[in-house]
Length: 96
Image (cartoon, rainbow, N blue to C red; front, top):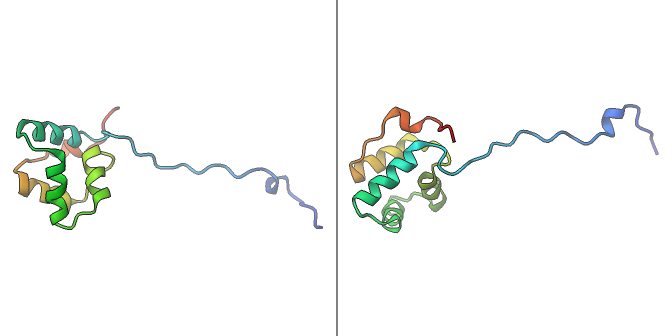
């Protein structure tokens, strides 16, 4: 068996930084949940509506949880369907 010449090969690899997604990280999710409550629209109704536009279920859940910024197509689709307007600040990271 060959012997290792370097101690670096014997040390465990460092963990890579992983991107973590936290619920309600972006303020647009809170704003949209308040909007749904005011209009008396159920979350399940919202999900069914977006499924009609072939939006994947996981994408809908990420949007509702505010885990990451949605692509512009999705945000514009939600704006067009429900008439809500998001501001640029709604898609900036929250301090939570």
